[in-house]
Image (cartoon, rainbow, N blue to C red; front, side, top):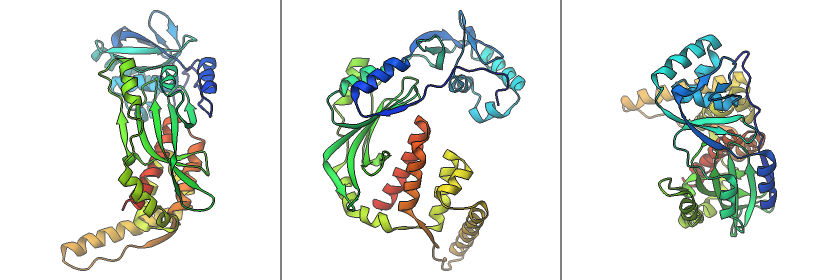
Length: 349
């Protein structure tokens, strides 16, 4: 993949529990970008992966892949095809889209973090955190591509055993590289581990990008308590059931497929305590039963009862959130969000 190409280094994310520490990390690590407007046709994309716009600069690997996406080349395709074929496609598509305005997001050291469509309206991490200074928060995850501020409301705990407590919190997400829009999601924060179970249907607010930056941040902050009280009450009643609930075989297959798309087949097998042979047998058995049930419905016959597995939802989700600890920003949130959807499907239904 990308043979003989050279990219700017990735900047790692970190977790802190102090606002000043977060601001210092942003400053010391150079987690800021300066947008430079140009056109796709005015940018030279060199064979070694660097780009030239007045001067030659290194770009990150994810920035190069984002540039390919802007040209219409999907990441999986860019990673698999030979480099010479990749650049043939890049130059052809660049000519076709020469007039498209783009923004080069330059780091303080002169390298390029990524390339995005123009215009660029994201607030800096420093400005975003300043608007929440003084709010009671549990942690801040900060990296170049992602910032998460976990705000915990201590007055709404959900106790479900002697060792653990869930709190309703709001998770503020922003990205100076525009991986995601500025938004917040209310969900459950788990005290026993350093991860969060996100439940998106608790409430979600997205920033209004039609507003100017300062006005947008003010309006966004005013909506910080965006959770739904009725859903919270239902979770208080339903969460004890979740702890002992076993997964149906069809649910194992559904969760495995979603997990494998995020972490790969091997890790999905491990998280669900499956080996390849067992997983293949489970999927084939579920598919065969699904086909038989569809035929039975068409014929007006009774369908077979679903098969219960030995897997516990609680154990699987613990494994998923533990896996998320070692992942990078967006991948981490995707796994946590899947865990949250699974919880909400069980508890709210």
